[in-house]
Image 1 (spheres, rainbow, N blue to C red):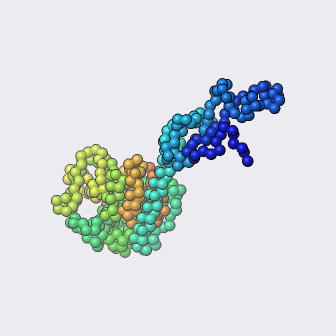
Image 2 (tube, one colour; image 1 turned 90 degrees about the horizontal axis):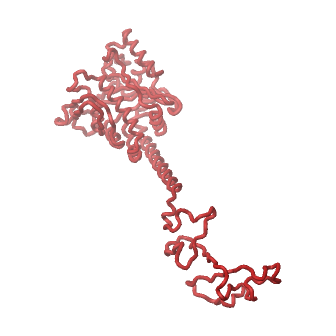
Length: 411
């Protein structure tokens, strides 16, 4: 048990600072020349110089430790306390004298926090996308799966997807011609995608083709006669291309998804469009001058549906097919913008609900990833001399189909 020093009180209150011992250099030549080698001379033991002489000494005290000490307001350099001890690497550090919460915001730690938030935001978006896609996976008839050819992984391999847009109006629409039955395909597009490839071929709705079991008529009637399964079979017979997946655009949710990503930029000529009598009659209207335009969801859908353009008599169904492909390219570009990153959870939830497809969450996710990897696809439309094919079974029609399909599959 250690005996207290003669000048040290045996008891002190908890609020008093503990005494400190100050040691000076040895007198009398140290241990070698001073016999027993008293440290302060005069046989006074470990006591400091009584007359206050001798060299000056710095008195050090340990820093307050723990959060409670900091919350009590104890400062690292409070009066009566020694300076802060150097860090192990030397120096007092850049945060000396700053509040504890500011000393935590060092550049390296701040970068790690930002990266952690980005990863968490992406993970949340991914989970929402997969859940939403799984909820939509049962919306395709079982006959569709039987009509499709199994595909692979669109991150490393290449699949062919049939994109179908129908003329069914959104539920509750007051647009003239809205109906629930007898739906025809308003758009048909083959999309070769995956493994760094992204190429598309639009098939105009007025293309006259043989429809199995129903004779020769316009290709858009196939969906009305037998749904997506017959549409798949008709397109395969026309092109000779096996289809791996199908996407049916949902007009009710398509504008919402466009709004989620902040709209899109599309370059157009002069547009004067009144669909189903225009806005005054419950339809849709769109008026644009030549140039690049930022479109919200409703205007993007109106442009995608515009066949008759009163400002340009040369506009036809082929012109509309070109605008539809531009819209898809613009969506792909918009997904990579910083503004879309902050909207990503909402866009991830609504994207699967804008379509009906045979693809589950993971497969649909690989399609989106494949679209980004493949870049913007050039516009390609099945046509002859800038007009829909007059006769796909004629030698000239077969030659046009062969050229278009070869470009789709091989670039």
